[in-house]
Image (tube, rainbow, N blue to C red; front, side, top):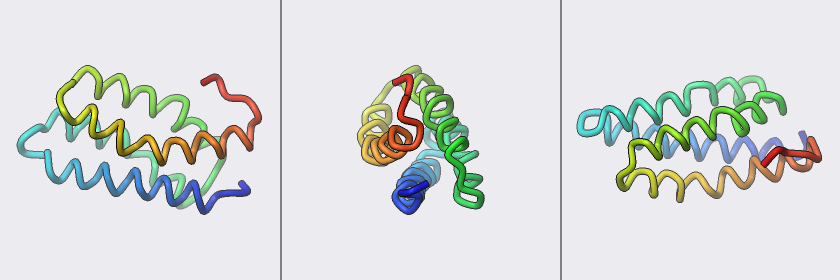
Length: 105
């Protein structure tokens, strides 16, 4: 993992935005808060035991599931979430491209 610091920073940014979003929407939009919590719940595992396989699983499985769930909810948070997560997801994608040299996306 040559750029694990960048990936950890990206994960930290995702967690920060997601947790703030959960806090801000838990009462007014619990469905959205649940989707965010479901999206974030495995990311701390990566921070405590970094693994290219864990981050690949997040990127290839959990991220698309989140995107599908957030699209079903619609509304402004779909746009806000996708906009915010784009930068961290690009960092993760670049890391995975360098590490595995092949991504299905």
